[in-house]
Amino acid sequence: MVQALGSMKDEPPSLLVCRHDVQCVESFTYLEALIHSTCSSEPEICRRSAMTRTAMQSLVWRSTIASLTKLRLYNAYILPVMLYGSDCWMVKKADVQRTDALDQWCL
Image (tube, rainbow, N blue to C red; front, side):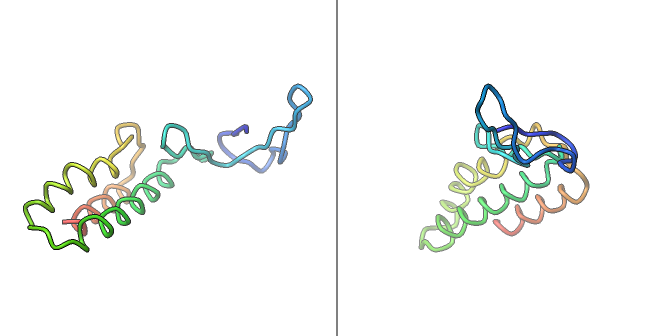
């Protein structure tokens, strides 16, 4: 697969490389991080938010464990799911607000 950064309007749906047909894609996952052709971090932030919500609902909310233990699980298992790769994100104000809202929802 090949990814073109920026606009995909001018790119063909596939390329011929060494007599092999190579597909042009808009996004792909590399080392568990979503790389999108728009060079924006918003798709990755939305993906991480969905993963965090799923993990939170399945691991913590449906259990009958103590609140302190739930908080420790959140800090040890849930928060790293959300923040993986966040040091490389290009965040906008809306992304920060979305992340803060998810953190408050989890807590």
